[in-house]
Length: 331
Image (tube, rainbow, N blue to C red; front, side):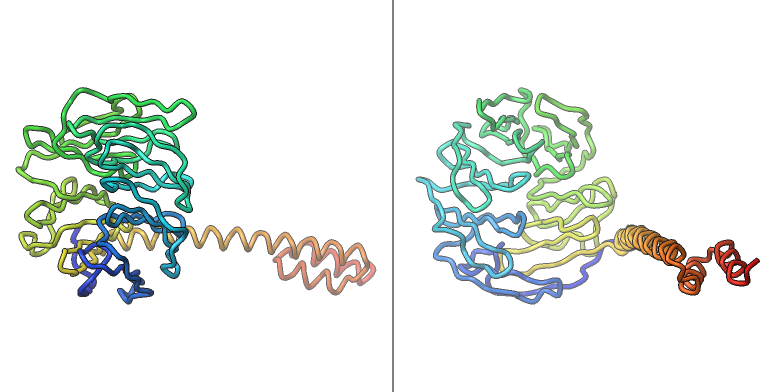
């Protein structure tokens, strides 16, 4: 399955760069809006029409449609280190002082949890159970409910862990091997080694053909797909983001964004969309046919035989049409 750059876009300042401006690009890579901030953005995530942004020591929520800010934002001593959107709405942030901060969808603070220093927020099992990697490299899970609690999933130390995608995570053990795991709040449903090559992951995402890794050197490597794109040894930047099963994005600190697409996966996606559209069309047709049938029955009951015949005929109900024709002839 081959991947290639479908389009590129070069700009001096981007949300993923070190500039003081953020901008939202449309599907054609054209800016929909541009907004200036007082500090450089170091993390951002989208959720339900909102974008949560970490810049400087602060956290702000802006509307995705126009870039306007909601509220005055929040800040903490030492600043925030990572952010995740919460299922169903809201945000969780880790701070450099060793706490998890929970906010609602509009950025209003709800609670704090002493977690110890967080290396990376990994993902949610559900709205209450959050997994992260602690400062020692171990995986932890917190239950954010009335009785906030947390536990260590296992004592194993991981040198690197990806975000959770589709319930799965990619991990690197101390010996450099890469593993794919399906975790739950108390351990693993499955955990298996998937790669023995000497790769140093910087970012990773899971697409329709498996995991893709952006290495520290800037190379882009497919694992389960066992392939690399054209010019695989080129420097593709510092960030990798998955947008859909057939689309991913790499970005560099200089502002170059590459949008990658797999023609094969895109074709499969189009087929699936066509099936969904066809199913919706059939459902709409069936509802329309039911409505026409009810009108035909009502017209027959009211003695409007000609109208009833026309309606039955549009439905292909020849028996009803013949029955009413015979009725008109007095047979």
